[in-house]
Image (cartoon, rainbow, N blue to C red; front, top):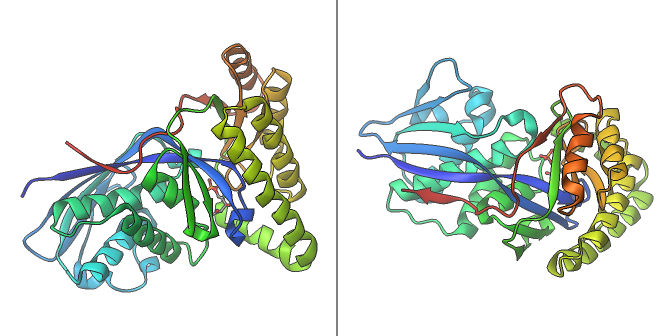
Length: 328
Ligand code: PMV
């Protein structure tokens, strides 16, 4: 049986993290580092999954994969979650050989979980006669991610890797608006350590439980900021957008989700002439982003590499990349 290959991009949160978990808006962009999933239907009911993160291939009968996805090894949970959604959606129960390969390490926080989930769904649709529209891929992908992450996640990452480009995302997927397919002038700095997203989401949930009114009011401000940021992106007013990055970072700082390493890189980037800078994603590690222009880009990149943050590096990525697709 011939192989079907699908690929999905990574993602970067631009603005609105944490508030988006409560249905508020965020802006997210797809990046040009991709996750590839190669898949071939089998004549028996075995599922075999291979990836660089597994010391040996994972294999199990379909019947053994119908239970809670937490029962399978962590390294294959998102692929198995996607398979479960596909089997339920199509009423099929066939086995597959599946191989995943990524152009980026999951340590960067660029959305490898969402990318592998969505690329698996696209490959499954491509390899069988069950067509899935992008809206179906988003719906099934988001359900799979929620299963794996015990209900935690706004779905912004699933939307980004499904649709690609730069998006306005709100209402846990009720509003997904494409803003641009053109790259944004961003510098992306990795802070040298990996974030624990679910722990940070729980930390913010606790804060909200303790101060419901103040938190809801401040999240509404973040939501309003997204409307302004959307406008700034549409008219390419990056100086204005940069200010919004700084305002959003001040709020994230108040939630205590930033780290000294992220703070150092953010301040360094601003001092080196960036229009604005903030963390990207849950905080607690992963990446920061800075908005620049052609003149300030080299000095901001240099400043990040020379900031003295252990393990920090500038990632070479382009934004507004295409969403999930079948490869030749
Ligand atoms: O850590 P990341 O890059 O997966 O981003 C998490 C963003 C949150 O808003 C904190 C969580 C979510 O699911 O939206």
